[in-house]
Amino acid sequence: MKVSTPDMMSDPTRSGLLLSARGLTKNYGKERAVDSVDLDVPERAFTTFLGPSGCGKTTILRMIAGFETPDAGSIVLDGRSLSGVPPERRPVNTVFQSYALFPHLTVFGNVAFSLTLRRHSNVDVAARVKRALDAVHMAEFGDRYPHQLSGGQQQRVAVARAIIAEPHLLLLDEPLSALDKKMRGHLQIELKDLQRRLGIAFVYVTHDQDEAFALSDIVVIMNKGRIIQKAAPLTIYARPANAFVADFIGAATLIPGEIANNGGVSGSAAIDTAIGIVQCPAVEGLVKGDKAVLAIRPEHVRIGADGLNTTIRHVVFKGDRYLVEAEVKGVILRFMADSPPAPGADVGLVVDRDRAFITRID
Image 1: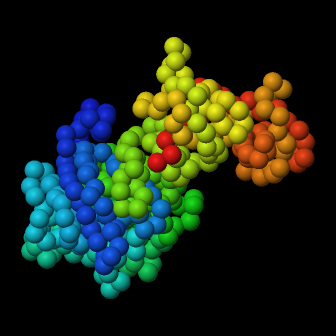
Image 2 (image 1 turned 180 degrees about the vertical axis):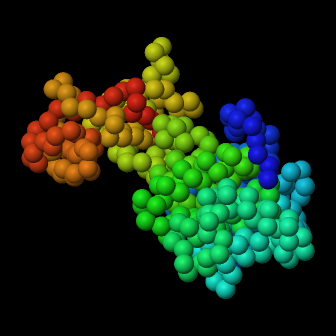
């Protein structure tokens, strides 16, 4: 099983190119599920497709795997076109949402299945199954059947079965969605650790933004069959490409406005909104008079007597802190507080001009 050294894994986004798709298109009747997508996947990186249901992310995964045929476009993996190559001949394996384990086979039998079809020797099969089960910490469960395993254990077996053939690329289609929150958290850590130890590229599909951010080197945001933004998680969160991404990722108040100025001496921009003119970091390509959106996240807001005069509307207990909603001129601002202000109280709120941001409408 190929394992990369720590130096090779230091920055996966700078690795060589593993997969390239150009003009990838898929129609289902009159519906365009994937619309002329261009995509590059680096070697050894954990790349996650994130977006609302029906945005096309699973369809792209299935086209890479060979389970769906593109209506247009190309997919090249390791310099080789995948056009006309059947799924079983692609150096790719898939972990499905349902795990798709054979109920009549033991854990060992499930993991060994693809090798037995290829007529590997029993000694080779046993050695490779052991390595795969060791990698997912399931070596002691080889004699059990799927119904004797927890959901998390079944997920590990599905991963072991996928990696035993040493694929160049591992595809994972919402593999943690059926698990409870605590188990998902544990397995997210295990999956990321496994990906680093194996040194192979993972392409992951989810609609859970917390999961995407916890796992990924690169996040690909999709909507309506198109890629809206592709970047590192921090970039996606702090500088979303447009209002859709800002709204989809994290909690944010989006306030329409008009650019008053952009790119002044201080490198700042001003946007005129319902709550007044707000200064933010400059945005490339926007000029005075352009319509835009001011995005304010809860961590961009703090209580301050010299700030906006707001009225507390709702307080929600979040375990360690309180999420507070305050209204100013018909706009709801959210912020976190250690102790809850009383609903109906008047509170001054300051918006951090260095962290709030302006983004495009589309």
